[in-house]
Image (tube, rainbow, N blue to C red; front, side, top):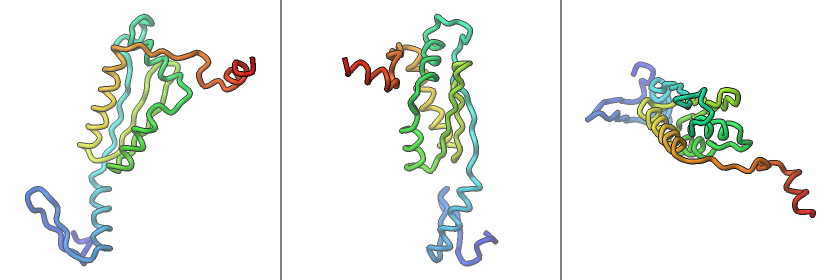
Length: 145
């Protein structure tokens, strides 16, 4: 509060209420949001990583080998709507996905819940992918015949 002497800050019914000029209020809101931001790190991995016949292990290996940015739309949505940064790192050798989320704790938990929902779905399905998907040369050759 001492950082922002030009505005009044109160807590009313679990809400922070600001009074003052909009420029000062925006700076105060940004400062408070930055102070409340936390980082959550978790990994999407198989329950049985050494069992190649386990559906989740197979599917995670397929997903980590995909040449596309599978989680791009999820990242863009969370960034645009909630100001949450989501980063994913595919570990092809292990068949795991490391997820880093930066936002308010409740938002971080919501992102994790969404990823865990994806993981639950991945346990039950079969990821079918053409071995030549993303191979532009193969696509050109097949059309020229």
